[in-house]
Amino acid sequence: MKKRVVAINSSKRKKTTYGLLKQIKKQMEDEDIIVDVFNLFDFNIKECTGCESCLRKGKCCLKDDAESLMTEIAGYDGIIISTPVYMNSISGKLKVFVDRTCRWMHRPQLASMPIMFVVTSAASGIKGTIKYLKNISLQWGGFPTDAISRKVKTLLIPVEAGEYNKFVKHLFMHEKKYRPDINQLIQFQVQRVLAEKVLPIDKEYWDAKGWSNQIYFFDARINIVKRSVAAVFYKFLSSRIRAV
Image 1 (spheres, rainbow, N blue to C red):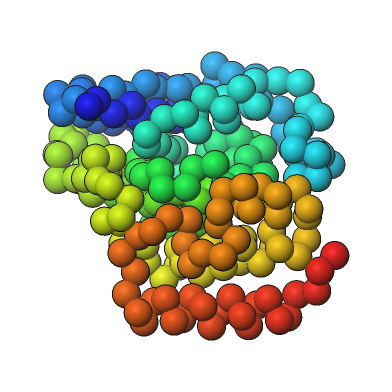
Image 2: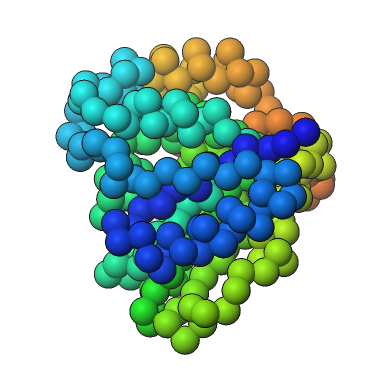
């Protein structure tokens, strides 16, 4: 069965970063993976106002393309997030979109979805940018995999399949074979406690998903040590946060 992947391009120039996405798209389509490239600059995405309407009511008060874009992205089997490095971080356009997805941290819609990163830079900032993107993916409930990066000196090096093999592997892998790391398990406990203690809409969502009494979003391969650490952390955090 073919898999569908959305590649998010957050560079306006459609040159360096976009060029890498085109390479990846062509190669993946030879492996029965359909890749749709979404250019964020083609969408009307307004800055978040911090009104918390999306958190408390489940719907944003702004009228633009962000809601429909989030819905469409959640329908794919995997995500590729790409960005040039601006001021040692992601592009401004991508940051605006990320801010609008804040309810995904409370009510994750990308659980078990593999996510890959493509980052380009003239010189520095790649490592920190990838780390930031990984943190965002964890808050979305996604499953971070590979990271492809290029600088000016390495820009002409073609993308090789080995650079995204984890991403492809997880696209076709059954959830029960996933091995979430301790950071993913800890992030899950944070979101689980917040759902229990803070917003009723979050608790309803988590209960409906069947996540409220689990150690992770799904029945993955988690060894006894990681399970124990996650369970202890959950009990500790739950005891420190009072219900609102």
